[in-house]
Length: 359
Image 1: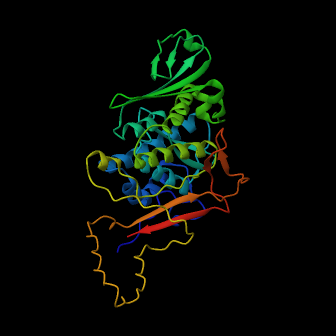
Image 2 (image 1 turned 60 degrees about the vertical axis):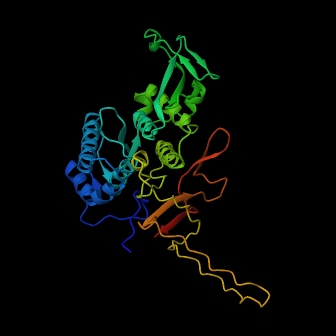
């Protein structure tokens, strides 16, 4: 049995980088040094079919673009090496281009911490990648526009009024159409949208795009997708919400990503293991058979049960790391929605990391 893979995104206080890597990354050359260390882990986290060398080049291009923007804004470009390493792994896990012209994903600075976030098109890309939908769109509605939204038939009539688009945004909606023609409609008022608003550069500079992304994130919770697709999309939404709350690395993402490309091409996948809630990581072993009393004279001996043949699944080493809520309802790191349901729990001192190894 080979060496177990490491997690894609580790916690700041649980991982250290080699001494040869600069602790502070402020230049493209220093960022390349970190990427040389991260390359193997990044490649292992990418979806199947994605060009590995191309993606590594996109990471460098994303950092160069951020560096140029910070220079224009006369802001410092100083990030911890560990946050650069983790941001690259997060982008690879979701398989989203961090430097594309469609703004699918971004490197976003939070003080000296570099984070990766999916943009509106990046989150939409994750939904379309499932193969269940022919279109997924979200739009904002401006005051004065004549929009007809029918919740019963899930239809939208939204003629564009460019004169009205200079006014105030009063709402937003998301419309998803499945390949079988069924529709899913999500709407949000201005008051609901403002509850998700954050004091970040993205919200200040591009409020319209952020409103579109907000209603898309809410609508994604109700889309009918497979459990594997649901896990990936929910991770993207949770990570985005946690990052916008300025808590770096609130979502811990495993290196062994769910490969949606294999499912779409018909390749078989090993069933996903349930997370082990024990605090200490222990390898999974076959349970010992209980001792059985010898059959009595009046009891017929039962034939031995046939063991199921090994079809080859589950042989690849796998380690899953998932955060578990500490259970404290008054914990300051717990974020809930309007109904009081737990949405994001940022790691705290009471939090336990579930770890499970599958052989």
